Amino acid sequence: SESASVELGIAEDSWIALLNKTPDLEKIGLSRGSGNILIADDDPIFTRSCRSLLEKMGYVVQVASTAQEALQVQEEHPCDLVLLDASLPQVTGIYMLRALRQRNNPEIIVLADYNALETATQATRFGANSYLPKPFEAHQLLAQVDQALIYKRDPLIVYIRTHSDKIQTREEVVDRFS
Picture 1 (tube, rainbow, N blue to C red):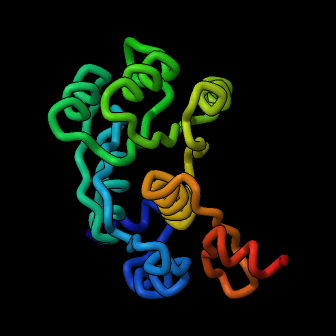
Picture 2: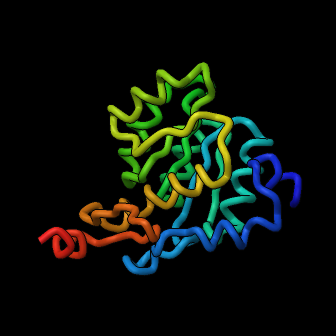
């Protein structure tokens, strides 16, 4: 759907270019699209746009519009990564972060509009991988998703961007600076 991709700031014909800029994830046994993602957000237009983008990248995506639904989905179909709206109705972002961490310990990226940025920064202190301020561009979301899933795959991986945008393993970094 063209409208969903435009809402995230990327035209349909830019998918190939975006994929070509992907870091060398296969080097560490991860490819874009390997992972299950839960989007917990009560904005249906935003959720539809994110889901469309992530599914086009090959991810399996589930959606929850309430805190209770998100916890139920994570319990029944554990996801590797949760994109968590910091201002879901009826609960705080910190409560949701803690509750999700108790259910299969997914990686968590907190999504926050301007009014919830303080909650998002607090969430990183309580264990969220990172946060993204809304609105954001597609490439920003994909970069955060890649980073979180790399960490989920192997927290000991040292990844740094070099001039060639390659991910390096811990051994390669040690060899380089030895």
